[in-house]
Image 1 (tube, rainbow, N blue to C red):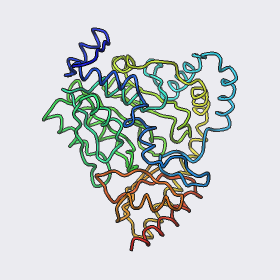
Image 2 (cartoon, rainbow, N blue to C red):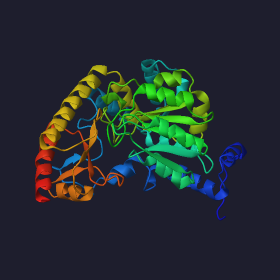
Image 3 (cartoon, rainbow, N blue to C red):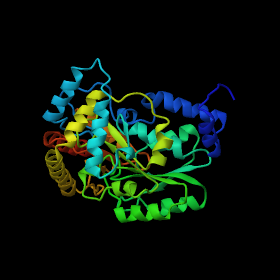
Image 4 (tube, one colour):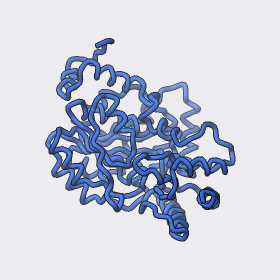
Amino acid sequence: MGGTVSFGSSVETDLASRGFTRRHMLRVAALVAAGSALPFSSERALAQLSDAGKLPDDAVKINANEFPEGPSARALEALAEVARRGNRYQYPETDALVAAAAQLEGLKPEHFSVYPGSSLALHHAVIAFTGPKRALVTAEPGYEAAARAAEFIGARVVRVPLRRDGAHDLPAMLAAAKSEPVGLFYVCNPNNPTGTVTPRVEIDSLVANKPVGSVVLLDEAYIHFCDEKPGVDLVRDGKDVVVLRTFSKIFGMAGLRAGFALAKKELRARMTGWNTGAMPVTAMAAAHAMLGEPELLAARKRDNAARRADLMAFFDAHGFKYTPSVSNKLMVDARMPTQQVIEGLQKQQVYVGRAWPVWPTHVRVTVGSAADLERFKSAFVEVIAASG
């Protein structure tokens, strides 16, 4: 089979029970070792698919769902303070972040695993709960990292189209488990790339009716932009649910890398066995500081909603259909090939999101600053007009 790999007898027994051969285990080892360096499956790698190398300073960058504002002044002060002590590991900074988050969410610190963002946590969930005999079920279109990681390690991926309203079709996703064993149901809520929400009552039904032994992975990277009830209480109640959180979006910390996986102790143990290394102390300090600024996050949510509504009104006025987003991005049907729109906008230094093959005429647009969106609107109208 080529190569050798050793994880320890208990881990190899667990992997073998999910159908991993030695060849598959080599793939797992590669995914764990390379992490975000793999060119297909991380948040950074997928964001780069929307990029075109180094962008001009005056470019409109609304292609990677980044927030137009960065960390708060308070967060930057905290970051600078720990940076001055950068010769020390400063592990207590991570403990302090967990303690603050646990108090805020009404959980115990034992429910938290800290990650550099949430993509690595997503990888670890795929490794922990899927395999050649345990499929991953995901939405289409959706965030691709889970599916690409699952395919890489040999797990089958079942892609279920979104409903007409953009919500996950959870009954159809659940039905997939009748034809084959499912290890993980991946629900990104609000969804990326559509920005649409799946009602919490429907997620509760999935959790209640899923097969015994399967896990629901609830990716809440964008939950702070909407009013939908988050899934933290499912963790509190001991359900087979892993909730992912990141500071990359409304907190404005995409480049600093901080996030959590929230789950009961048994599920965390299966994921954190793949985790190594200390967290970036600057990110831990900045994240901790921003957790103490709920009024700032509320203001960012309101401002994003106003800019999003203005963008939707623009599309309405010009007769373009779009997904009913509650997040900081949406998909608009440009009525022409996606790549043609992307390239046309780039000529005007406006950069939007990558293409999803299942929707060949849709473009993902991040809700950037007001100035960004004004330049996008002008460029979009020109590109569409030039197409004839």
